[in-house]
Structures are given as structure tokens and as C-alpha cells.
Amino acid sequence: MSEIVIRLQRCVVVLKQAEVMDMLKQNPDLWAAGLKRGKGLNRFEKAQERRPRGGGQNEFKR
Image (tube, rainbow, N blue to C red; front, side, top):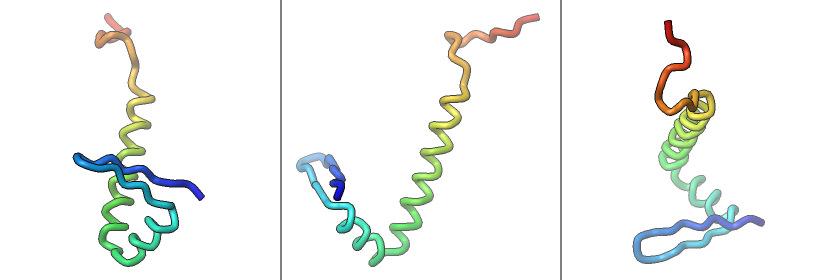
């Protein structure tokens, strides 16, 4: 099973996927907040992929 590494300011926490799922099941508000952040991150990454990379200048000039 995969492990999840969380780097904090003074330590590193390594949890198994099942352990994280158990914690999330016990706290549905945390689950909802994490899902919302994940959806936002996915949207941001998709928008970055669609963004033209031309050095900041528009390619279409009149």
C-alpha cells in the first residue's frame, strides 16, 4: 500500500493510505475541505496547461 509523506516545519510524517482514509472518515468536515482544495488545485493546473506560453506578449496583434 502506498505511503503519504507530509513535510511539516519540524518533522516529517509518513502515513499509510488506509490510515489517512480512517482519519478522514472520522472527520467529514476535513474530508469536504480536502476535496474542495483538490478540485481547486485540479482547475488551476488545467488552466495553467491551457495558458499560452509566449513570454507574456500576445501572439495576435493587429
